Length: 408
Ligand SMILES: Cc1cc2nc3c(=O)[nH]c(=O)nc-3n(C[C@H](O)[C@H](O)[C@H](O)COP(=O)(O)OP(=O)(O)OC[C@H]3O[C@@H](n4cnc5c(N)ncnc54)[C@H](O)[C@@H]3O)c2cc1C
Ligand SMILES: NC(=O)c1ccc[n+]([C@@H]2O[C@H](COP(=O)([O-])OP(=O)(O)OC[C@H]3O[C@@H](n4cnc5c(N)ncnc54)[C@H](O)[C@@H]3O)[C@@H](O)[C@H]2O)c1
Image 1 (cartoon, rainbow, N blue to C red):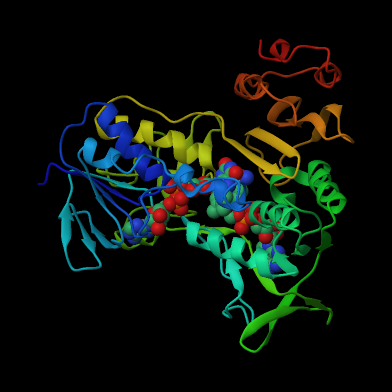
Image 2: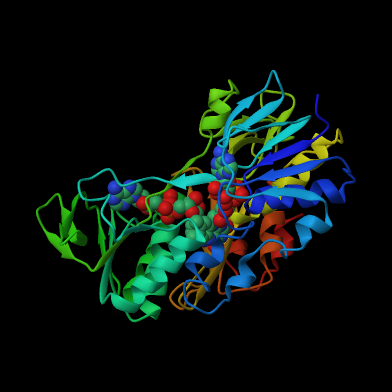
């Protein structure tokens, strides 16, 4: 059997795994295979500073170009893995070659869900996942005077904010009653609705997209099920993602909402691991499997996987974390709440001015917290979530009570 460690997926999680393997002392052959032609880069700037034209291309990459050769990482770009053979310990590539592995890490991430309506395959219906998508959307902002955004999730809202900054009129079309409703619940979703309204975005909730209307081969608007028409020079779609778990499925690994792993990030095959957007990992703190579609997870899981691949004791149990920047609102969120899986939200601070912390509670325990335009408190929020203690909600709401009191 080959002594090589092979990583499939050369994005944030894949590149951090290569780094962690070298830092943890792995000195065997290390192959990092990615189907994109770019070396590994981070995606958050693609809907924020890079899209706004405030960040240079060079700032998005995970490592400098020279890093891979310096660390003896065999980086194969523009190379798609088409199959995994667990019995032979080999992966097959689209060019017909094969690569043997002793341990395999799947960091294949996720892909945007496509909008399943007539007209959606037209040019100028745009998705945002890759840097080339961000380039195309930024170019569109230069020529379009109005756009329609389908989906008021993270992609939809961050793109709407960037479009407004570029002076483009925006209509957001969302199936649910509020933006980000499944993740944040009604109380905090309203804050984001207010934010976008205040910046001139036309928000339409509870709508059903019937078709993309097209003229001259280009999208010119969106027809809704109620018969109304939203004219637009371009349409941007952000209606969620699906994990890229086909390779694992076809190889006979346990899958279901991604690749199912244990807390060491090991799949049902003892020599195959998974990290990042594609991993549905058992989380000891939450006592269940979760698949996290956020940057911090792709950044941090690889160290655990690398250690486990090297036979060390390692468990991934960090409190889930993510952030967003939209207009003048910056926030961080720590914790995990299932849709509707909380009893109440406690606010501390000034919600009107959008300077506050929101806590989601279940049976008087803090399940998650979000600091909005208040900084240097997220570590304390994570500690509160981790402690799992019951809290006095009156004191939790009082900005004069130090957060450390709730950690115990
Ligand atoms: C525009 C945008 C903005 C975001 N902003 C934020 C943010 O502000 N905060 C936050 O917390 N999260 C954010 N996210 C989410 C975050 O970027 C993802 O969670 C993260 O990229 C996941 O990393 P990953 O390496 O697991 O997967 P991915 O980034 O999806 O990378 C997987 C890589 O594997 C490659 N691949 C897949 N299959 C194969 C194959 N068969 N062979 C070879 N290569 C393959 C893919 O081409 C891709 O390059 C954002 C995402 C996007 C798209
Ligand atoms: N700041 C961040 O953390 C950040 C930023 C950008 C992207 N991301 C990640 O990128 C991925 C993709 O983001 P996203 O915004 O596409 O997904 P999402 O899951 O955040 O939001 C999708 C939204 O689209 C709506 N929707 C679904 N089908 C629809 C339809 N047919 N018509 C109208 N609305 C519809 C949903 O109700 C939901 O509000 C996610 O994994 C997300 O976590 C994260």
